Image 1 (cartoon, rainbow, N blue to C red):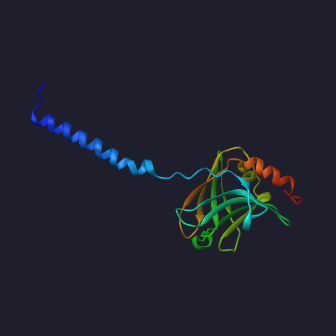
Image 2 (spheres, rainbow, N blue to C red):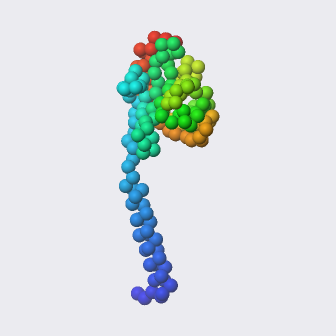
Length: 169
């Protein structure tokens, strides 16, 4: 079989593109994938709460999304992240399955924002609906960003916490 010069050039070009694409894809295939972080009973500074925590963008900062029992207010949803104060996070939009709502967050602490779940029963229902993942968008903040967090196991963990929370729900 004989090939003309243009045909050979095309075949060499295609082969080079395929080889180059394979080399380009190697680093992507080698990237570390963060394992899922299901909801558990938290310890340390978050003792008494249930939630999920993960490292933020290759830093030593940990972002936690949790529910805890407050003696005065009942169940509280809390975002614990060293950067929420710096980012000026004041409101967030949550999307969990069909639930979509923007909620004002409280907190003067540089690393925590909260909301009372008795004021947002639909958020509590969404957190315990069995959906595996939640997305949160900063609405009122100095920095625009969005993030997601795992909800695997949230239903069971929050149900256990509710049983031990004697105040209003």
